[in-house]
Figure 1: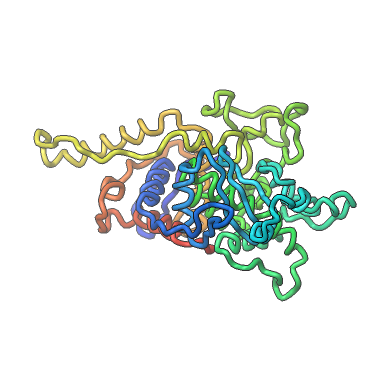
Figure 2: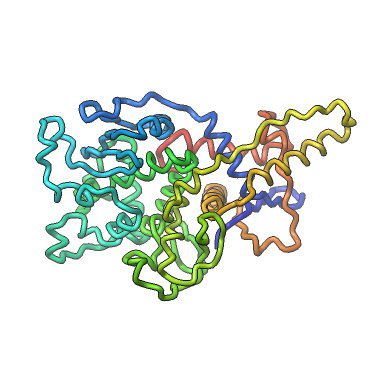
Length: 410
């Protein structure tokens, strides 16, 4: 079950607050609008591919990726040359040095991650669970190495991905010992990083900070749900554990536990009863389900500024009128509030509760019986007013802004 509300635990004797997750989406969207953009190094060609190393550069590149919609574009990461196709899917084209020496046309297929094809998130999750399959030679020999799909290995995978995002060298040593996974990590993760932090944000800009939040949760070893003994590991972030090797055209058995996913029209929510429908659920990453990125990016989540004529409204009733208008605006924006939006909200709530565990707690719809959910604070959503009435929600906005400023762990 997904989390829908944030419980704000105050340090005073006043009653606790319940904040609707839709308000969090609005705050994140506003933070994105004002977030720092930085110059992108390179022009996206094979001779001068993009080279990104800061949160602001990744945000700028993702935002402008649609201008390359009908052409190929290139980025280097971890010594790999990655190609964006017209569908905005990324594939690995092999070592970048081959392009510099004019040998790109001769690059063998088996030296490219996933054979040079754009991987699905299911395929990426398979590599996390079975890293020996990264290289065809070891896969053919049946070599088995410990998988990366557990709490112990997830921090290593996340740290490697952060190095790639910041154009830092992948760690050859982990905790003072030679990192035996070094070559597999450097070979397989760049194309996944490009998919998560360029392709998905180009469809839905919220994906960039939300995916950084997922890295934070995985690096910290945070449980997804303590009752199910499951954690934010990289494989679960990318794909549902009951469908790692599932060919959805052949299998219809029941999932190991009841899950929620979109119905056939792509936006509603219903119970998924058979495993062949788990591709509509995906992993913990909001964009991971089939067409998830397109669904989430199909509608901007924002509220227009208030421009109502208040001359005929008594002054003592204007604040009430504003709050009523704001409630209506948020309700209009969230009509057809779909599964992808719900997943985004759930990640935001889990992340905030992790960042401030003594202040915030995650809440589900089923826990709201008899509890009042507050109307969003007008001043927080529209004005930079800083006083005792707005400080609480302002703290949430500060956390969002921090997450947008850096690629490092928070």
